[in-house]
Image (cartoon, rainbow, N blue to C red; front, side, top):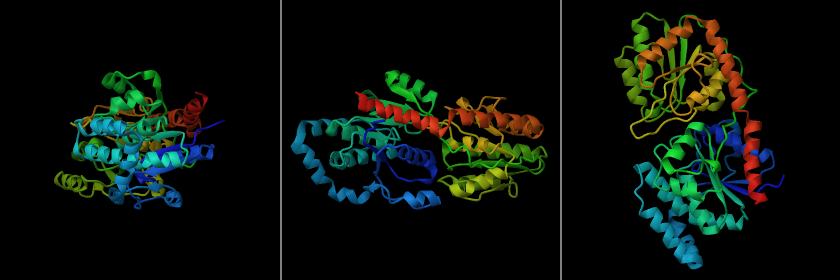
Length: 407
């Protein structure tokens, strides 16, 4: 199979919370794709698994120091095609970007693209891919406009909710687009009137063999688990309020709320104010190597995702797949792509967002019928194996790249 020499553009690589991208890179390389990583930021060093640390040096990084070296790259492309440079600056600088974070990221990505475009020609790159639709895809788009090298990108969650101001341009010009959920395809069709024939559903691939089956004793104190970044779209405040209802109802339980993020102090304060001291523990960030221990100790995994006022939301959180692979029953909200995996009463319990009472009722339902809960978890595990098989899904990605060579 002839495959194009490919560049991946990321903000960071590897990153502990992006194990799905790390696994994709490793599997594609193993399958024979000549793939080189470029990052817009510096090196991420915190919380890396041993495997990630082993390849952390395998990336060409720009980082903040590039700001002092960008002018020669801009001048290089100005001399080659000043009209194109003017056009790109006009598009990027005169658009109304949404949100400070995405604005800064996209402007930085656009500047970095002038350097990346030179490196892609030097490395004889034949295809550019951005695993995120925001800043990395903007860099891929600008570099493609400068060099003529085709590009693609993947849509996931916060990178298109809300969309940045050049998302429709990127969709129009991309050779193809990958989406990790069907919900995203519908969203892009509505938002950008996109040609959906170029948008391909490619679910993430997750490891399917290393997970130890959790015993799920389902005996008091019931062990509840939630795991993720402490940010608004995770909805953890609604989970804590559900725990308050469970405690008031006399249930004997313990919630492990693992992770870290900007809302950690707020969540700890809320747990205290709700009188949940002793009922809720915050172990902090847990490395990928140690996550399996949390699942093996859990009776129920809860993913209370919400849609933020900005539109930001989850896609299909990888932790749901990992929970099911450990045979841990799942409660999740009907947000974004989650219903593509969690079918209510079949592979888990699906509940409305922002509803503590619905969470509490779902916990009571699962704890009262262990046999039914485990049956749902078994069916969920089978669905993960079917939809998120890395060998099958990454083979589909390789086939997409192969079409570029055939053109």
